[in-house]
Image 1: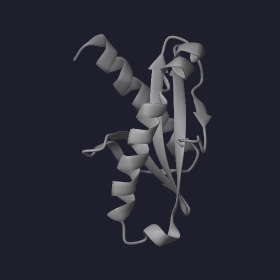
Image 2: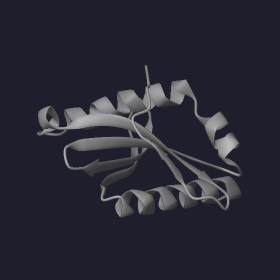
Image 3: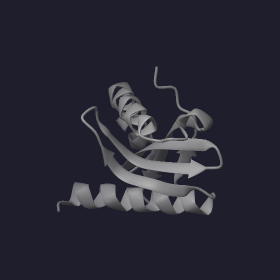
Length: 115
């Protein structure tokens, strides 16, 4: 595993810890489909958060790493995830981003537009 992969795994671990502290239950990590990958799927009450994690040296570089195309792939992958759930008509999906910058607290941005 190279340095970039280790940083990604660490960022996802930090994001999972943050979500758990906020009361979320982690349903999946690195959920892969033919449409794309979702870093984290987490549920809190009737909300299902599909989370993209960005780990970089600075918050600014995290923001710069967010790509609309990637979020659209995540949305298509989330539709596959939702179609496999029996309770999908009672669950409200949303798309979040967690930014993990070196030596900073992670930033959780809820309900990002992926249109």
